[in-house]
Length: 463
Ligand SMILES: Cc1cc2nc3c(=O)[nH]c(=O)nc-3n(C[C@H](O)[C@H](O)[C@H](O)COP(=O)(O)OP(=O)(O)OC[C@H]3O[C@@H](n4cnc5c(N)ncnc54)[C@H](O)[C@@H]3O)c2cc1C
Ligand SMILES: NC(=O)c1ccc[n+]([C@@H]2O[C@H](COP(=O)([O-])OP(=O)(O)OC[C@H]3O[C@@H](n4cnc5c(N)ncnc54)[C@H](O)[C@@H]3O)[C@@H](O)[C@H]2O)c1
Image (cartoon, rainbow, N blue to C red; front, side):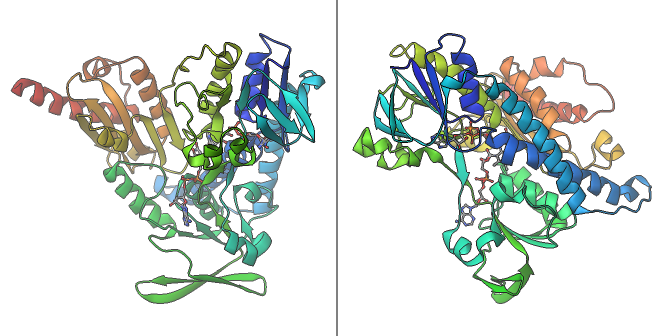
C-alpha cells in the first residue's frame, strides 16, 4: 500500500509530487499522455508566445500613433517556428524535473478508481492510503461541427501545432481563450470573425468595463455578438459559414474554425461512480472548496480537474498544499487560500483581483466603486495605449480594498500590486499614503482610489 498516489502529472500533479517526496518515498504518480503539462504544451506558454508576436506586430503597424513610419512584413511560418522553438524550451525545462524522479515512482497510463483505496492502471491494481486527483481538463468540442469539418475544426489543443497561419479564421466563443487567440490571430494578419453567443467578451464582470471591452474589441475584431453559425458547408478547401444577422442570412468563408467554448474536467474518465453511485454527475461532486476533499474519502481533487479557478498558479499552489491533507489523513485542514488573481492577455489586458464586481453583488456586500478611465490618463496617452479603465471595490464600512477589475494596458502588473494590497489587508487611507511615481500607469490607480475615498468620506460624514 502506497502512502499516496497522484493521478495526473500536469502543473498540479508535479507540484504535489515535489512536495510529497520531501516526506515519503512510498509514492506513485500516474500520467496519461505527455508529461510536459498543458501549461507548457498547449496552454499558457504557447498562447503567450503567439500573443507577443501579435502585439509587437500591432505596435509596429500602429507606429503612426507615435509619429513613426515603418513597413512591416509578417511571415506566419516564422512566427509559428518561434512558438515551436521556445515552447520546446519550456517543455524541456518541465521534463528535466520529471526525468530526475525515481523511475519506480512513475507510471504512464490512464487511471480508474476501483474503490476508495484502489485504482487500476494498464490492467494492474495499485493501493494507496490517499489519492490526489490532478487530471486537468480538456476543451469542449462541438461534436456536430467536428464531424463535418474534421481536422478543420480545431481547439487550443491543435492551434499551436500549425506550421503557418490561415488567411481566414472563425472563432466560436468569446471567453478567455477566444479573445486571447482571436486578437492574436487578427494582429498576425489572419482575418478573424468571432461568433459570440452572448454580448460578453473575456472575463470582466463589471458592466462598465465589459461595455468598454465590447466597444474596444469591436474596433479591431469582427465580433458577431449574440450570433452563432446556423450551418457550415465544406466547399473545396474552404468552409462556408451561414449565419443570421439583423434577420438576414449571411455567410463568410474561412479555412479553420476554432472552437473556444470552454473546458471540462477530465474527472469523468475516472469511474468515480464506482465509489458512490451519486458521483455519476461530476458537476455535482461533493468537493470541499477549502480542503479539496471528495466527500469523506481519502481523495483530494486539485487544479483544473476541480470546479474552481482553472489557472496555473492555483494548480501549483493547491497541488503542493493538499499533500499535507493526504499525508495527515483523516486530519484534514483548509488549504490556505491565495488572493484571487486572474489575468487575460488580450490588449488592453483584463484582470480580476480579489472579489469581482459580480461576486460582491451576489454576496450582497455593501461596497463603493472607485473608477478611473484610461482614455485620458497621462502615461497611457504618452504610450498611445490610452483606452479602458479600472474599478476598485472598497468596503463601505471598513474602507478595506476588497477587489478590483481592470481593463487597461499593463493590467498584469497593476493587478499584482492590487492583489498584494488586498493580501496586506490595506484600507483606502493606507493605500493613498503610498508613493505614486510620475508619470506612470499606477497614477491611474491613485485616481480610482481617490474617487472611492471621496464617496467613502461623504458616507462617513453622514453617519
Ligand atoms: C490556451 C490556454 C491558455 C492558458 N493560459 C493561461 C495563462 O496565461 N495563465 C494561467 O494561469 N493559466 C492559463 N491556462 C490554464 C492553465 O494552463 C491550467 O490552469 C493548468 O495547466 C492546469 O494544470 P493541471 O495540473 O490542473 O492540469 P494539466 O496540466 O492538464 O495536467 C493534467 C494531467 O493529467 C493527465 N490525465 C488526465 N486524465 C488522466 C487519468 N485518468 N489518469 C492519469 N492521468 C490523467 C493529463 O493527460 C495531464 O497530463 C491556459 C489554458 C489554456 C488551455
Ligand atoms: N490568461 C489566462 O489565465 C488564461 C488563458 C486561457 C485560458 N485560461 C483558463 O482556461 C479556462 C477556459 O477558458 P475558455 O475560454 O475555454 O472558457 P470561458 O468560460 O472563458 O469561455 C467559454 C466561451 O464559450 C462560450 N460558449 C460556451 N458554450 C457554448 C456553446 N455551446 N456555443 C457557443 N459558445 C459557447 C461562452 O459563452 C464563452 O464565451 C478559463 O476559465 C481560464 O481560467 C486562462
